[in-house]
Image (tube, rainbow, N blue to C red):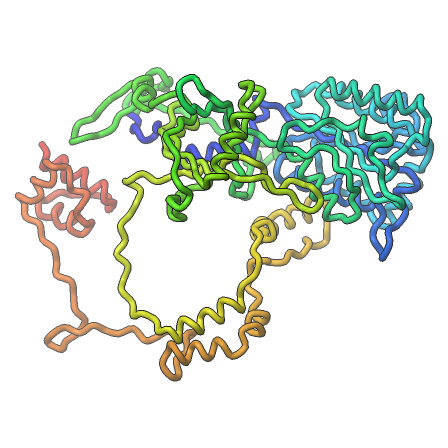
Length: 610
Protein backbone atom coordinates (compact mmCIF):
# COMPACT_ATOMS: atom_id res chain seq x y z
CA UNK A 1 0.00 0.00 0.00
CA UNK A 2 1.51 3.28 -1.04
CA UNK A 3 2.61 5.85 1.51
CA UNK A 4 0.53 9.00 1.78
CA UNK A 5 3.52 11.27 1.18
CA UNK A 6 3.98 9.67 -2.21
CA UNK A 7 0.72 11.29 -3.23
CA UNK A 8 0.74 14.53 -1.27
CA UNK A 9 2.40 17.41 -3.16
CA UNK A 10 4.41 19.73 -0.96
CA UNK A 11 5.20 23.35 -1.64
CA UNK A 12 8.62 22.69 -3.19
CA UNK A 13 7.13 20.31 -5.73
CA UNK A 14 4.44 22.85 -6.54
CA UNK A 15 7.04 25.54 -7.09
CA UNK A 16 8.99 23.26 -9.44
CA UNK A 17 5.80 22.57 -11.38
CA UNK A 18 5.19 26.31 -11.80
CA UNK A 19 8.76 26.87 -12.97
CA UNK A 20 8.58 23.97 -15.40
CA UNK A 21 5.32 25.26 -16.80
CA UNK A 22 6.78 28.71 -17.41
CA UNK A 23 10.14 27.62 -18.78
CA UNK A 24 9.05 24.67 -20.87
CA UNK A 25 5.61 25.75 -21.96
CA UNK A 26 2.60 23.46 -22.19
CA UNK A 27 2.29 23.22 -25.95
CA UNK A 28 -0.57 20.70 -25.83
CA UNK A 29 -2.77 23.20 -24.02
CA UNK A 30 -1.66 26.64 -25.12
CA UNK A 31 -0.04 25.96 -28.49
CA UNK A 32 3.26 27.16 -29.88
CA UNK A 33 4.66 30.63 -30.39
CA UNK A 34 5.62 31.73 -33.91
CA UNK A 35 7.81 34.55 -35.18
CA UNK A 36 8.45 35.77 -38.74
CA UNK A 37 11.39 38.07 -39.52
CA UNK A 38 10.52 40.24 -42.53
CA UNK A 39 13.78 41.94 -43.56
CA UNK A 40 14.27 44.69 -46.11
CA UNK A 41 16.93 43.67 -48.68
CA UNK A 42 17.24 47.03 -50.44
CA UNK A 43 20.63 48.60 -51.19
CA UNK A 44 20.19 51.12 -48.35
CA UNK A 45 20.30 48.27 -45.82
CA UNK A 46 23.84 47.30 -46.86
CA UNK A 47 25.42 50.75 -46.36
CA UNK A 48 27.91 50.69 -43.48
CA UNK A 49 27.50 53.14 -40.63
CA UNK A 50 29.87 55.80 -39.43
CA UNK A 51 32.95 55.01 -37.34
CA UNK A 52 33.11 51.45 -38.68
CA UNK A 53 29.66 50.49 -37.47
CA UNK A 54 28.11 47.44 -39.14
CA UNK A 55 25.44 47.90 -41.77
CA UNK A 56 21.77 47.65 -40.87
CA UNK A 57 21.57 44.33 -42.71
CA UNK A 58 24.49 42.92 -40.72
CA UNK A 59 22.96 44.04 -37.42
CA UNK A 60 19.67 42.42 -38.39
CA UNK A 61 21.37 39.11 -39.20
CA UNK A 62 23.13 39.14 -35.84
CA UNK A 63 19.80 39.68 -34.10
CA UNK A 64 18.16 36.89 -36.11
CA UNK A 65 20.98 34.52 -35.19
CA UNK A 66 20.68 35.48 -31.53
CA UNK A 67 16.95 34.74 -31.54
CA UNK A 68 17.53 31.42 -33.34
CA UNK A 69 20.06 30.24 -30.76
CA UNK A 70 17.96 31.43 -27.81
CA UNK A 71 14.91 29.63 -29.20
CA UNK A 72 16.92 26.43 -29.59
CA UNK A 73 17.94 26.62 -25.94
CA UNK A 74 14.81 27.93 -24.23
CA UNK A 75 11.84 26.99 -26.44
CA UNK A 76 12.85 24.73 -29.30
CA UNK A 77 9.23 23.92 -30.16
CA UNK A 78 8.52 27.49 -31.32
CA UNK A 79 8.33 28.25 -35.05
CA UNK A 80 10.56 30.86 -36.72
CA UNK A 81 10.75 32.08 -40.35
CA UNK A 82 13.04 34.47 -42.25
CA UNK A 83 11.67 36.35 -45.28
CA UNK A 84 13.35 39.05 -47.38
CA UNK A 85 11.46 41.63 -49.43
CA UNK A 86 12.67 44.11 -52.02
CA UNK A 87 14.87 41.41 -53.59
CA UNK A 88 15.72 40.86 -57.24
CA UNK A 89 15.26 37.10 -57.01
CA UNK A 90 12.08 35.45 -55.78
CA UNK A 91 11.60 32.24 -53.82
CA UNK A 92 8.25 31.52 -52.25
CA UNK A 93 5.48 28.90 -52.56
CA UNK A 94 4.59 28.66 -56.25
CA UNK A 95 6.67 31.86 -56.77
CA UNK A 96 3.44 33.83 -56.69
CA UNK A 97 5.07 37.00 -55.38
CA UNK A 98 7.86 38.82 -57.14
CA UNK A 99 10.72 40.37 -55.19
CA UNK A 100 9.93 38.23 -52.09
CA UNK A 101 12.47 35.60 -50.99
CA UNK A 102 11.49 33.08 -48.29
CA UNK A 103 14.86 32.13 -46.85
CA UNK A 104 13.40 29.95 -44.06
CA UNK A 105 9.86 28.59 -43.82
CA UNK A 106 7.96 28.58 -40.53
CA UNK A 107 9.57 25.68 -38.71
CA UNK A 108 11.50 24.80 -35.56
CA UNK A 109 14.97 26.40 -35.49
CA UNK A 110 17.95 24.11 -35.95
CA UNK A 111 21.71 24.05 -36.36
CA UNK A 112 21.51 24.19 -40.16
CA UNK A 113 19.46 27.39 -40.07
CA UNK A 114 21.94 29.03 -37.71
CA UNK A 115 24.75 28.20 -40.13
CA UNK A 116 22.78 29.65 -43.04
CA UNK A 117 22.19 32.89 -41.14
CA UNK A 118 25.89 33.02 -40.21
CA UNK A 119 26.71 32.89 -43.92
CA UNK A 120 24.87 36.22 -44.39
CA UNK A 121 26.91 38.11 -41.79
CA UNK A 122 29.88 40.37 -42.44
CA UNK A 123 31.35 41.43 -45.77
CA UNK A 124 31.21 37.91 -47.19
CA UNK A 125 27.60 37.71 -46.10
CA UNK A 126 26.78 40.93 -47.92
CA UNK A 127 28.39 39.54 -51.08
CA UNK A 128 26.45 36.28 -50.73
CA UNK A 129 23.20 38.21 -50.17
CA UNK A 130 23.86 40.29 -53.29
CA UNK A 131 24.36 37.10 -55.34
CA UNK A 132 21.49 35.11 -53.82
CA UNK A 133 18.91 37.80 -53.15
CA UNK A 134 19.84 40.94 -55.03
CA UNK A 135 18.00 44.24 -54.65
CA UNK A 136 14.94 45.03 -56.72
CA UNK A 137 11.51 46.64 -56.51
CA UNK A 138 9.63 46.78 -53.24
CA UNK A 139 6.07 45.69 -52.58
CA UNK A 140 5.43 45.35 -48.87
CA UNK A 141 1.88 44.23 -49.60
CA UNK A 142 3.15 41.17 -51.50
CA UNK A 143 5.58 40.41 -48.68
CA UNK A 144 2.80 40.57 -46.07
CA UNK A 145 0.59 38.41 -48.29
CA UNK A 146 3.39 35.83 -48.54
CA UNK A 147 3.77 35.83 -44.74
CA UNK A 148 0.01 35.29 -44.37
CA UNK A 149 0.35 32.20 -46.60
CA UNK A 150 3.15 30.91 -44.36
CA UNK A 151 0.82 31.09 -41.39
CA UNK A 152 -2.11 29.51 -43.24
CA UNK A 153 0.04 26.54 -44.30
CA UNK A 154 0.79 25.65 -40.66
CA UNK A 155 -1.60 23.00 -39.34
CA UNK A 156 -0.36 23.21 -35.74
CA UNK A 157 -2.11 25.24 -33.09
CA UNK A 158 -0.35 28.58 -32.64
CA UNK A 159 -0.79 30.42 -29.36
CA UNK A 160 0.96 33.61 -30.43
CA UNK A 161 1.79 34.93 -33.90
CA UNK A 162 4.19 37.82 -34.37
CA UNK A 163 5.78 39.46 -37.43
CA UNK A 164 8.76 41.82 -37.17
CA UNK A 165 9.68 44.21 -39.99
CA UNK A 166 13.33 45.33 -40.19
CA UNK A 167 13.92 48.30 -42.49
CA UNK A 168 15.68 51.65 -42.73
CA UNK A 169 13.25 53.12 -45.31
CA UNK A 170 10.33 55.09 -43.91
CA UNK A 171 8.67 55.36 -47.32
CA UNK A 172 9.36 52.02 -49.05
CA UNK A 173 7.04 52.61 -52.05
CA UNK A 174 8.28 56.17 -52.67
CA UNK A 175 4.80 57.65 -52.87
CA UNK A 176 3.10 54.86 -54.88
CA UNK A 177 -0.43 55.13 -53.48
CA UNK A 178 -1.56 51.80 -54.97
CA UNK A 179 1.20 49.83 -53.23
CA UNK A 180 0.66 51.79 -50.02
CA UNK A 181 -3.05 50.94 -50.02
CA UNK A 182 -2.35 47.28 -50.80
CA UNK A 183 0.16 47.04 -47.92
CA UNK A 184 -2.28 48.62 -45.46
CA UNK A 185 -5.02 46.21 -46.57
CA UNK A 186 -2.83 43.12 -46.10
CA UNK A 187 -1.58 44.41 -42.75
CA UNK A 188 -5.19 44.81 -41.62
CA UNK A 189 -5.96 41.25 -42.78
CA UNK A 190 -3.02 39.89 -40.80
CA UNK A 191 -4.12 41.72 -37.66
CA UNK A 192 -7.62 40.26 -37.98
CA UNK A 193 -6.12 36.75 -38.04
CA UNK A 194 -4.28 37.39 -34.77
CA UNK A 195 -0.84 38.33 -36.13
CA UNK A 196 0.91 41.15 -34.25
CA UNK A 197 3.07 43.32 -36.51
CA UNK A 198 6.05 45.14 -35.01
CA UNK A 199 8.43 47.62 -36.66
CA UNK A 200 12.13 47.45 -35.85
CA UNK A 201 13.17 50.55 -37.78
CA UNK A 202 16.87 51.22 -38.17
CA UNK A 203 18.92 54.38 -38.46
CA UNK A 204 18.97 56.29 -41.73
CA UNK A 205 20.42 59.64 -42.85
CA UNK A 206 17.95 62.42 -42.11
CA UNK A 207 15.98 60.40 -39.57
CA UNK A 208 13.16 57.86 -39.80
CA UNK A 209 9.64 59.34 -40.00
CA UNK A 210 7.19 56.70 -38.76
CA UNK A 211 4.15 58.80 -39.63
CA UNK A 212 4.82 58.63 -43.38
CA UNK A 213 3.73 55.02 -43.78
CA UNK A 214 4.40 52.53 -41.00
CA UNK A 215 2.12 54.04 -38.35
CA UNK A 216 -0.84 52.40 -40.12
CA UNK A 217 0.99 49.07 -40.56
CA UNK A 218 2.08 48.10 -37.07
CA UNK A 219 -0.26 46.65 -34.45
CA UNK A 220 -1.36 48.61 -31.37
CA UNK A 221 -0.01 47.50 -27.97
CA UNK A 222 -1.41 44.19 -26.76
CA UNK A 223 -1.94 45.60 -23.25
CA UNK A 224 -1.14 48.63 -21.16
CA UNK A 225 2.28 47.26 -20.22
CA UNK A 226 3.56 47.57 -23.80
CA UNK A 227 4.73 50.90 -25.16
CA UNK A 228 3.66 50.32 -28.73
CA UNK A 229 5.50 51.86 -31.67
CA UNK A 230 8.90 53.37 -30.87
CA UNK A 231 9.60 56.69 -32.56
CA UNK A 232 13.40 56.63 -32.27
CA UNK A 233 15.24 54.26 -34.65
CA UNK A 234 17.93 51.81 -33.49
CA UNK A 235 21.51 52.76 -34.32
CA UNK A 236 23.29 50.21 -32.09
CA UNK A 237 23.24 46.44 -32.07
CA UNK A 238 22.58 46.33 -28.31
CA UNK A 239 19.50 48.57 -28.63
CA UNK A 240 18.12 46.48 -31.48
CA UNK A 241 18.67 43.23 -29.57
CA UNK A 242 16.98 44.69 -26.52
CA UNK A 243 13.91 45.75 -28.48
CA UNK A 244 13.62 42.42 -30.27
CA UNK A 245 14.04 40.51 -27.02
CA UNK A 246 11.34 42.57 -25.37
CA UNK A 247 8.97 41.89 -28.26
CA UNK A 248 9.57 38.27 -29.18
CA UNK A 249 9.23 36.94 -25.63
CA UNK A 250 5.57 36.29 -24.99
CA UNK A 251 4.54 36.43 -21.35
CA UNK A 252 2.67 33.33 -20.20
CA UNK A 253 0.58 33.50 -17.04
CA UNK A 254 1.09 30.77 -14.45
CA UNK A 255 -2.54 31.24 -13.45
CA UNK A 256 -5.44 33.64 -13.80
CA UNK A 257 -7.15 34.27 -10.49
CA UNK A 258 -9.45 36.73 -8.78
CA UNK A 259 -8.27 39.22 -6.19
CA UNK A 260 -11.11 39.63 -3.71
CA UNK A 261 -11.17 43.08 -2.10
CA UNK A 262 -14.43 42.51 -0.24
CA UNK A 263 -17.96 41.24 -0.73
CA UNK A 264 -18.70 41.25 -4.45
CA UNK A 265 -15.57 43.24 -5.37
CA UNK A 266 -13.25 41.03 -7.44
CA UNK A 267 -10.34 41.97 -9.68
CA UNK A 268 -9.11 39.51 -12.32
CA UNK A 269 -5.32 39.19 -12.21
CA UNK A 270 -2.71 37.09 -13.97
CA UNK A 271 0.15 35.52 -12.01
CA UNK A 272 3.58 35.67 -13.68
CA UNK A 273 7.02 34.44 -12.66
CA UNK A 274 9.60 37.21 -13.00
CA UNK A 275 12.58 34.96 -12.29
CA UNK A 276 12.89 31.23 -12.92
CA UNK A 277 16.05 29.27 -12.18
CA UNK A 278 17.77 28.36 -15.45
CA UNK A 279 18.84 24.73 -15.54
CA UNK A 280 20.50 22.40 -18.00
CA UNK A 281 17.94 20.56 -20.12
CA UNK A 282 17.35 17.00 -19.04
CA UNK A 283 19.04 14.30 -21.07
CA UNK A 284 16.99 12.15 -23.44
CA UNK A 285 17.33 8.38 -23.46
CA UNK A 286 17.88 6.90 -26.91
CA UNK A 287 17.71 3.37 -28.27
CA UNK A 288 21.30 2.37 -28.94
CA UNK A 289 20.56 0.76 -32.33
CA UNK A 290 18.57 3.58 -33.98
CA UNK A 291 19.13 6.63 -31.72
CA UNK A 292 15.36 7.05 -31.45
CA UNK A 293 13.95 8.43 -28.19
CA UNK A 294 12.52 5.81 -25.86
CA UNK A 295 9.68 6.13 -23.38
CA UNK A 296 9.63 4.74 -19.87
CA UNK A 297 6.48 3.40 -18.23
CA UNK A 298 5.93 2.66 -14.55
CA UNK A 299 3.64 -0.13 -13.45
CA UNK A 300 2.68 -1.32 -9.97
CA UNK A 301 2.39 -5.01 -9.08
CA UNK A 302 1.02 -6.86 -6.07
CA UNK A 303 3.86 -8.01 -3.81
CA UNK A 304 2.38 -11.45 -3.16
CA UNK A 305 0.47 -12.42 -6.31
CA UNK A 306 2.47 -10.40 -8.83
CA UNK A 307 -0.69 -9.19 -10.55
CA UNK A 308 -0.83 -5.77 -12.21
CA UNK A 309 -2.60 -3.15 -10.09
CA UNK A 310 -4.83 -0.46 -11.55
CA UNK A 311 -5.00 3.04 -10.03
CA UNK A 312 -8.52 2.31 -8.78
CA UNK A 313 -7.20 -0.69 -6.82
CA UNK A 314 -4.70 1.32 -4.79
CA UNK A 315 -5.20 3.42 -1.68
CA UNK A 316 -3.05 5.81 0.32
CA UNK A 317 -1.93 5.24 3.89
CA UNK A 318 0.13 6.86 6.61
CA UNK A 319 1.24 5.44 9.95
CA UNK A 320 0.19 7.44 13.00
CA UNK A 321 0.73 6.07 16.51
CA UNK A 322 1.55 2.56 15.19
CA UNK A 323 -1.78 2.52 13.39
CA UNK A 324 -2.12 2.59 9.62
CA UNK A 325 -4.55 5.28 8.48
CA UNK A 326 -5.99 4.23 5.10
CA UNK A 327 -7.79 6.72 2.88
CA UNK A 328 -9.16 6.83 -0.63
CA UNK A 329 -7.72 9.27 -3.16
CA UNK A 330 -10.92 11.33 -3.09
CA UNK A 331 -10.70 11.60 0.69
CA UNK A 332 -7.12 12.84 0.48
CA UNK A 333 -8.23 15.43 -2.09
CA UNK A 334 -11.04 16.56 0.19
CA UNK A 335 -8.83 17.13 3.24
CA UNK A 336 -6.25 18.94 1.13
CA UNK A 337 -8.74 21.46 -0.23
CA UNK A 338 -9.05 24.61 1.87
CA UNK A 339 -10.77 26.92 -0.59
CA UNK A 340 -10.97 27.84 -4.25
CA UNK A 341 -7.85 29.35 -5.86
CA UNK A 342 -7.52 33.11 -5.55
CA UNK A 343 -6.25 36.06 -3.53
CA UNK A 344 -8.25 37.32 -0.54
CA UNK A 345 -7.38 40.74 0.90
CA UNK A 346 -6.87 40.74 4.68
CA UNK A 347 -5.52 44.24 5.29
CA UNK A 348 -2.66 46.67 4.79
CA UNK A 349 0.66 47.14 6.59
CA UNK A 350 3.45 49.77 6.41
CA UNK A 351 6.37 48.78 4.20
CA UNK A 352 8.80 48.94 7.14
CA UNK A 353 7.01 45.91 8.65
CA UNK A 354 8.25 43.74 5.77
CA UNK A 355 11.73 42.44 6.58
CA UNK A 356 14.32 40.87 4.24
CA UNK A 357 14.19 37.54 6.11
CA UNK A 358 10.47 37.27 5.30
CA UNK A 359 11.31 36.32 1.69
CA UNK A 360 11.38 32.53 1.90
CA UNK A 361 10.98 31.70 -1.81
CA UNK A 362 11.07 33.54 -5.15
CA UNK A 363 8.24 36.01 -5.56
CA UNK A 364 5.73 36.14 -8.39
CA UNK A 365 4.08 39.11 -10.07
CA UNK A 366 0.40 39.94 -10.61
CA UNK A 367 -1.06 42.13 -13.32
CA UNK A 368 -4.73 42.89 -14.15
CA UNK A 369 -6.59 40.82 -16.75
CA UNK A 370 -9.10 43.20 -18.31
CA UNK A 371 -10.41 40.53 -20.68
CA UNK A 372 -11.57 38.36 -17.78
CA UNK A 373 -13.43 41.01 -15.76
CA UNK A 374 -14.19 44.46 -17.13
CA UNK A 375 -12.93 47.27 -14.95
CA UNK A 376 -10.13 45.18 -13.40
CA UNK A 377 -7.41 47.43 -14.85
CA UNK A 378 -8.93 50.62 -13.42
CA UNK A 379 -9.49 49.22 -9.93
CA UNK A 380 -6.07 47.54 -9.92
CA UNK A 381 -4.40 50.80 -10.99
CA UNK A 382 -6.19 52.76 -8.25
CA UNK A 383 -5.12 50.23 -5.60
CA UNK A 384 -1.54 50.31 -6.86
CA UNK A 385 -1.42 54.10 -6.87
CA UNK A 386 -2.74 54.42 -3.31
CA UNK A 387 -0.34 51.78 -1.96
CA UNK A 388 2.59 53.64 -3.52
CA UNK A 389 1.41 57.01 -2.21
CA UNK A 390 0.95 55.74 1.37
CA UNK A 391 3.94 53.35 1.32
CA UNK A 392 1.83 50.30 2.18
CA UNK A 393 1.73 46.67 1.17
CA UNK A 394 -1.39 44.52 1.05
CA UNK A 395 -1.59 41.37 3.18
CA UNK A 396 -3.50 38.56 1.47
CA UNK A 397 -4.28 34.89 1.66
CA UNK A 398 -3.14 33.18 -1.52
CA UNK A 399 -4.14 29.81 -2.98
CA UNK A 400 -2.36 29.40 -6.29
CA UNK A 401 -4.07 26.24 -7.54
CA UNK A 402 -6.77 23.76 -6.69
CA UNK A 403 -5.85 21.48 -3.75
CA UNK A 404 -2.87 23.70 -2.90
CA UNK A 405 -2.42 24.84 0.71
CA UNK A 406 -3.06 28.52 1.49
CA UNK A 407 -0.17 30.93 2.03
CA UNK A 408 0.12 34.38 3.52
CA UNK A 409 1.58 36.81 0.99
CA UNK A 410 2.50 40.48 0.85
CA UNK A 411 1.54 42.45 -2.27
CA UNK A 412 4.39 44.94 -2.68
CA UNK A 413 3.59 47.74 -5.18
CA UNK A 414 5.96 48.38 -8.08
CA UNK A 415 6.00 51.39 -10.41
CA UNK A 416 6.72 51.23 -14.14
CA UNK A 417 10.26 52.00 -15.29
CA UNK A 418 11.53 52.56 -18.86
CA UNK A 419 15.04 53.05 -20.17
CA UNK A 420 16.40 55.72 -22.50
CA UNK A 421 15.06 53.85 -25.55
CA UNK A 422 11.53 53.84 -24.06
CA UNK A 423 11.73 50.07 -23.53
CA UNK A 424 9.99 48.92 -20.40
CA UNK A 425 12.37 47.69 -17.69
CA UNK A 426 9.86 46.92 -14.94
CA UNK A 427 6.07 46.81 -15.42
CA UNK A 428 3.57 48.33 -12.99
CA UNK A 429 1.93 45.86 -10.65
CA UNK A 430 2.36 43.98 -7.37
CA UNK A 431 5.17 41.64 -6.39
CA UNK A 432 3.75 38.72 -4.42
CA UNK A 433 6.13 38.01 -1.51
CA UNK A 434 5.56 34.67 0.22
CA UNK A 435 5.57 35.16 4.01
CA UNK A 436 6.66 32.53 6.55
CA UNK A 437 4.35 30.87 9.06
CA UNK A 438 5.25 30.74 12.73
CA UNK A 439 6.47 27.15 12.20
CA UNK A 440 8.95 28.35 9.57
CA UNK A 441 10.75 30.88 11.79
CA UNK A 442 13.78 29.59 13.69
CA UNK A 443 15.19 31.04 16.89
CA UNK A 444 18.95 31.26 16.45
CA UNK A 445 21.52 31.35 19.22
CA UNK A 446 24.60 32.71 17.44
CA UNK A 447 27.97 32.40 19.17
CA UNK A 448 29.19 35.48 20.96
CA UNK A 449 32.24 37.09 19.42
CA UNK A 450 34.40 39.94 20.71
CA UNK A 451 33.17 43.32 19.55
CA UNK A 452 35.28 45.26 17.05
CA UNK A 453 36.83 48.53 18.10
CA UNK A 454 35.86 51.78 16.45
CA UNK A 455 39.24 51.95 14.72
CA UNK A 456 38.69 48.52 13.15
CA UNK A 457 35.17 49.50 12.05
CA UNK A 458 36.39 52.71 10.42
CA UNK A 459 39.11 50.82 8.55
CA UNK A 460 36.60 48.28 7.22
CA UNK A 461 34.34 51.14 6.09
CA UNK A 462 37.21 52.44 3.98
CA UNK A 463 37.64 48.99 2.41
CA UNK A 464 33.93 48.72 1.64
CA UNK A 465 33.89 52.19 0.10
CA UNK A 466 36.74 51.18 -2.23
CA UNK A 467 35.03 47.98 -3.38
CA UNK A 468 31.53 49.32 -4.02
CA UNK A 469 30.09 49.05 -7.54
CA UNK A 470 26.73 49.23 -9.24
CA UNK A 471 25.23 45.74 -9.35
CA UNK A 472 22.87 44.65 -12.12
CA UNK A 473 21.63 41.08 -12.03
CA UNK A 474 21.21 40.99 -15.81
CA UNK A 475 24.94 41.65 -16.26
CA UNK A 476 26.03 38.26 -14.89
CA UNK A 477 25.38 35.00 -16.70
CA UNK A 478 25.70 31.52 -15.25
CA UNK A 479 29.14 30.32 -16.47
CA UNK A 480 28.20 26.65 -16.11
CA UNK A 481 25.17 27.03 -18.38
CA UNK A 482 27.06 29.19 -20.85
CA UNK A 483 29.87 26.65 -21.15
CA UNK A 484 27.36 23.81 -21.53
CA UNK A 485 25.49 25.45 -24.39
CA UNK A 486 28.70 26.64 -26.06
CA UNK A 487 29.84 23.03 -26.18
CA UNK A 488 26.50 21.89 -27.62
CA UNK A 489 26.60 24.70 -30.17
CA UNK A 490 30.10 23.73 -31.27
CA UNK A 491 29.03 20.10 -31.78
CA UNK A 492 25.86 21.05 -33.63
CA UNK A 493 27.51 23.62 -35.92
CA UNK A 494 30.65 21.52 -36.59
CA UNK A 495 32.97 24.08 -35.00
CA UNK A 496 36.59 23.18 -34.34
CA UNK A 497 36.32 24.35 -30.74
CA UNK A 498 33.61 26.00 -28.64
CA UNK A 499 33.49 29.75 -28.27
CA UNK A 500 35.30 30.95 -25.19
CA UNK A 501 33.20 32.43 -22.40
CA UNK A 502 34.13 34.94 -19.74
CA UNK A 503 33.36 33.96 -16.17
CA UNK A 504 31.82 37.23 -14.99
CA UNK A 505 31.35 36.07 -11.39
CA UNK A 506 35.05 35.37 -10.93
CA UNK A 507 36.57 38.07 -8.71
CA UNK A 508 39.05 40.36 -10.44
CA UNK A 509 41.83 39.98 -7.90
CA UNK A 510 44.33 42.32 -9.56
CA UNK A 511 41.79 45.13 -9.84
CA UNK A 512 40.71 44.62 -6.22
CA UNK A 513 44.32 44.77 -4.98
CA UNK A 514 44.93 47.92 -7.01
CA UNK A 515 41.86 49.61 -5.53
CA UNK A 516 42.59 48.67 -1.94
CA UNK A 517 46.32 49.36 -1.92
CA UNK A 518 47.72 49.21 1.65
CA UNK A 519 44.28 49.05 3.32
CA UNK A 520 44.32 45.24 3.56
CA UNK A 521 47.63 45.12 5.42
CA UNK A 522 46.52 47.94 7.70
CA UNK A 523 43.32 46.08 8.55
CA UNK A 524 45.24 42.85 9.24
CA UNK A 525 47.58 44.69 11.61
CA UNK A 526 44.58 46.07 13.50
CA UNK A 527 42.68 42.78 13.80
CA UNK A 528 45.12 39.84 13.69
CA UNK A 529 48.27 39.20 15.72
CA UNK A 530 51.72 39.82 14.26
CA UNK A 531 52.84 37.31 11.65
CA UNK A 532 49.32 35.95 11.09
CA UNK A 533 48.73 34.35 7.68
CA UNK A 534 45.03 33.64 6.94
CA UNK A 535 45.91 31.17 4.15
CA UNK A 536 47.61 28.70 6.50
CA UNK A 537 45.44 26.38 8.57
CA UNK A 538 46.20 26.22 12.29
CA UNK A 539 47.25 22.88 13.70
CA UNK A 540 44.32 21.05 15.34
CA UNK A 541 44.40 21.05 19.11
CA UNK A 542 44.16 17.64 20.82
CA UNK A 543 41.90 17.44 23.82
CA UNK A 544 43.46 15.55 26.72
CA UNK A 545 41.71 13.79 29.56
CA UNK A 546 41.96 14.99 33.18
CA UNK A 547 44.48 12.25 33.95
CA UNK A 548 46.80 13.58 31.29
CA UNK A 549 46.33 10.55 29.03
CA UNK A 550 45.08 10.40 25.44
CA UNK A 551 42.11 12.07 23.82
CA UNK A 552 38.89 12.17 25.74
CA UNK A 553 36.34 9.56 24.66
CA UNK A 554 32.60 9.99 24.69
CA UNK A 555 30.80 7.80 27.23
CA UNK A 556 28.93 4.86 25.75
CA UNK A 557 25.16 5.22 25.91
CA UNK A 558 23.38 2.09 27.20
CA UNK A 559 19.66 1.38 27.02
CA UNK A 560 18.05 -1.35 29.13
CA UNK A 561 15.18 -3.62 28.12
CA UNK A 562 12.48 -1.57 29.89
CA UNK A 563 13.55 1.62 28.15
CA UNK A 564 13.50 -0.14 24.78
CA UNK A 565 9.97 -1.45 25.35
CA UNK A 566 8.88 2.06 26.32
CA UNK A 567 10.41 3.45 23.12
CA UNK A 568 8.58 0.79 21.08
CA UNK A 569 5.23 1.57 22.70
CA UNK A 570 5.67 5.32 22.23
CA UNK A 571 7.04 4.97 18.69
CA UNK A 572 10.21 6.90 19.55
CA UNK A 573 12.85 4.38 18.50
CA UNK A 574 13.88 6.81 15.78
CA UNK A 575 15.44 9.06 18.43
CA UNK A 576 18.12 6.46 19.18
CA UNK A 577 21.33 6.30 17.19
CA UNK A 578 22.32 3.41 14.93
CA UNK A 579 25.05 2.04 17.32
CA UNK A 580 22.54 1.99 20.20
CA UNK A 581 19.99 0.18 18.02
CA UNK A 582 22.62 -2.41 17.02
CA UNK A 583 23.50 -3.02 20.68
CA UNK A 584 19.80 -3.42 21.45
CA UNK A 585 19.45 -6.03 18.72
CA UNK A 586 22.40 -7.94 20.19
CA UNK A 587 20.83 -7.67 23.66
CA UNK A 588 17.64 -9.43 22.53
CA UNK A 589 19.38 -11.83 20.17
CA UNK A 590 17.84 -10.33 17.03
CA UNK A 591 19.70 -11.23 13.85
CA UNK A 592 19.52 -8.50 11.19
CA UNK A 593 21.09 -8.55 7.76
CA UNK A 594 20.59 -4.85 7.13
CA UNK A 595 22.49 -1.98 8.70
CA UNK A 596 20.11 0.87 7.90
CA UNK A 597 18.36 2.58 10.77
CA UNK A 598 14.84 1.83 9.55
CA UNK A 599 15.64 -1.90 9.20
CA UNK A 600 16.91 -2.02 12.78
CA UNK A 601 13.81 -0.20 14.03
CA UNK A 602 11.52 -2.62 12.15
CA UNK A 603 13.34 -5.64 13.63
CA UNK A 604 13.07 -4.32 17.20
CA UNK A 605 9.42 -3.38 16.71
CA UNK A 606 8.55 -6.87 15.42
CA UNK A 607 10.38 -8.50 18.36
CA UNK A 608 9.20 -6.29 21.22
CA UNK A 609 5.84 -5.18 19.88
CA UNK A 610 4.40 -8.71 19.60
